Image (cartoon, rainbow, N blue to C red; front, side, top):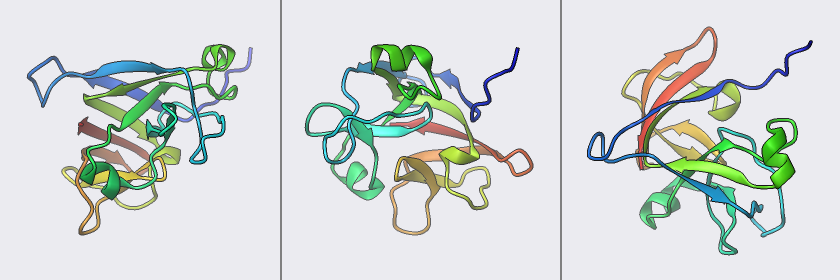
Length: 156
């Protein structure tokens, strides 16, 4: 039997309340929309926020998200048929927010060099290294350049 090849993504852990800024919690989004409010699909490991229609939509601008205190969620069960059959069937996604640690493959973060303690933020639904003025929304714990895997801790 052939195995379905997927990008590597894993929620390594969530923290109990009061530890590392609080606990991770989940939410099921019944609607998934693009920036214009039209239905779309999302894969696990994509970072989203709430659209004005109430649906989940890809995070586009980290500066605005942090400044406006908009909640950022990480999809752990998507609705893309290439990624999740159950999410596709019910046309819902499950996402987490709060204090958690994730392992991301190269399709889930922008290319570049990462080192422990580097700050990261969100841009176009991906984790991106902080350059100068962007808000720090997560911290790099490890980067394996050979396998292109990034481990990041968030406390949002």
